[in-house]
Length: 185
Image (tube, rainbow, N blue to C red; front, side, top):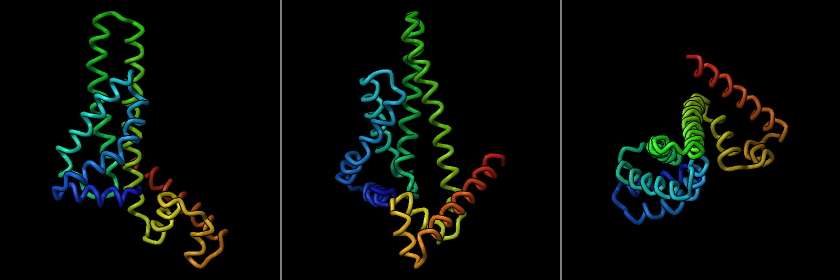
């Protein structure tokens, strides 16, 4: 499901449709579980944080702005809850002097903190995408969100596949320059 379709369901939830939230949970649960599994020290931790993230999401969904970033928004909530859980468990493990468990928790905590930088990068990328002219945004959306082949994009624009490939390359280069400017600003 693409980000705009998720936002349509989120909008229903924001208007009070509880069934829409159940649908939303069904659609994002797998992605969130995978995301959390890369940081968690146990399956129980994944389940606990996932449940808390979904509750927090529901409680705060009215604050979400419909910008096609819902999954990243929920992952941010999940990441913050995972950091809290890892910090809490790290203190317990550390106080019990279980060295191996402490090392595992520390590695998971370091990984979770690194994920925040990824989310920040994705947000910068979204901001840079907004700077592109509409035809360039449309091509990026077709290629990377809708996963259309270059030949189909070329056909839609009445151009050759070579033109589409070169244009996409140039758009990516422009985005790379924007990202560099944003990072140094």
